[in-house]
Image 1 (tube, rainbow, N blue to C red):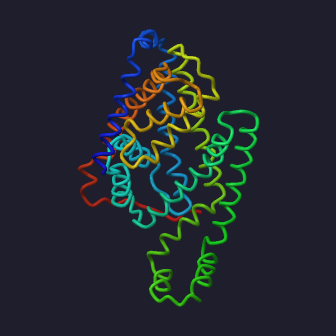
Image 2: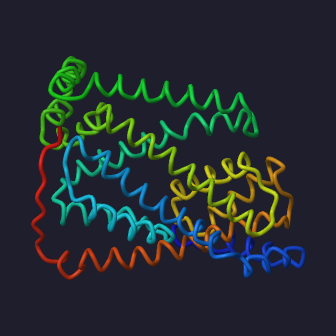
Length: 329
């Protein structure tokens, strides 16, 4: 299934490429070759910025439970992001292996960590996504509903996580589950494995970490929106900031959720959304914008992954690695 899904993604990318190189898009392709250095620098800079922001979000979310080297997290994120183009969830496997072996983060703490990151993606992007489905575009109601929805999501997350975080929260969990008198369950929630999984509540109850991660996620989407707008400007495609925001959000969410690697699936999904919302039609030059963003992002990711591999020293990683950790505040 992974191989078939990846092959389908490659096929979708080829379909997008055929649309991009259609005769009616030759003018846009010519403009890409004539782009000025400043616009290209902004385009590449936005791709670098979103890579660094996502790496920092991982570090911020784990900080309430453990402190690890932020540079190491960025290096790991760069390599993992590049591997996310491929199937078999190699990016996830790399993150788990590196953070467990190098940074001494227990496996179940890693599970809680990744779960907290996923929850905060929903907190930051869930309300705008729901508003987009309702409004089919970006207007004053969309902005108001998204802002209120995000604030409510943050409040609910901090409140519910706070109920179950820490020793007091663990005691509440015991009081809820103990009356069920299920022996294996009672032993599990009192074991070390559950104590590490329980860390997800500590991460999601940490006000500074949640607020900072949510802000960085919104900043990331803003930067992704900017690169679509800049690419459209370079290519002479009429794409407003509102449409760029919808396409950028879809592009990111598909890449994160795709089980077969994000190669081709993000591009086809963004093209499909644009056609659904009437932003573009079949063969429209918007597909050139989407592929231009993907191309610049790929170049940035490959270069940063090379730097990340050099910093990580795979030969050193394969040996027994120390890695000092300490409890967070």
